[in-house]
Image (cartoon, rainbow, N blue to C red):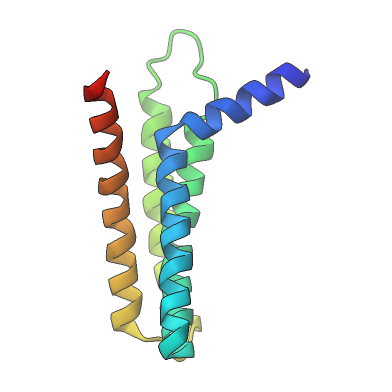
Length: 133
């Protein structure tokens, strides 16, 4: 049983989705710390953008790590993860804009776009690693 738990943890950290979510979490922390130097509302806006980006990524990670049923291609599982991620993102956007007052919209969207670019950077770095092999 203990080997299974450590094996699952090893699979988790090797997952590209985990690496993306970890990079987005780190970028959220850095952006909010930088914004806190200038303005409290900007820092809160950066944290809200991070939550809006990282929570759906965590959902996709959890769904992607489920074992694939024998005979299934796994496509339905990937589709379920992406549809769930999209639905969570839309719901979190709505919750932020309804309940978070005051909100610096420029910082919120700037951080959100930056976090989306984090995904591209992580994937680019991973592809370079693969090409060096």
